[in-house]
Image (cartoon, rainbow, N blue to C red; front, side):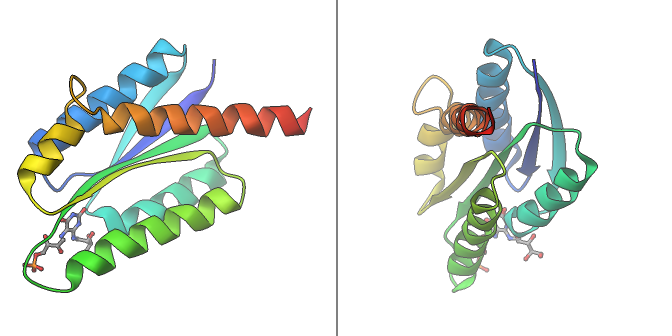
Amino acid sequence: MARFLIVEARFYDHLNDMLVAGARAALEKAGHEVEVLTVPGALEIPAAISMAVDSQQYAGFVAIGVVIRGETYHFEIVAGESARGIMALTMDGIPIGNGILTTENEQQAIVRADPAQLDKGGEAAKAALALLDIQAKFAS
Ligand SMILES: Nc1c(NC[C@H](O)[C@H](O)[C@H](O)CO)[nH]c(=O)[nH]c1=O
Ligand SMILES: CC(=O)[C@@H](O)COP(=O)(O)O
């Protein structure tokens, strides 16, 4: 059993509740412990994961959030830079699954957040589990 940290950017409560539930279910089904840390927005997720890595308490991480396009260029910044920060951390060998939805509207987000539909939170957790397995394979 390992300990995973779900780092959620809680911008839309009803969507995050579904994403976190899906991620938690996948991790607990695999026999792992789960802790949840909430940050203001997706741009804070990479830094929070980086800080948590330094604590050496967690085997892997799942990033959870929802970025829905508005009127300005800010969508591109939040969506792109949160993904870039997470990718930089994974390239350092940190098992992270990216469950940050980047959608044009709320309906697209609902379909992807719902564990009974596309379950992107669960899919992100499974990606983190896969990276943990790969890490173990090459460490042995
Ligand atoms: N518009 C969304 C944001 N924006 C906030 C940023 O993520 C960040 O917290 C702020 O710029 C302060 O650094 N965050 C989301 O997660 N989702 C959005 O739709
Ligand atoms: C993704 C966003 O930043 C968005 O929620 C903000 O909306 P706007 O671009 O209209 O300020």
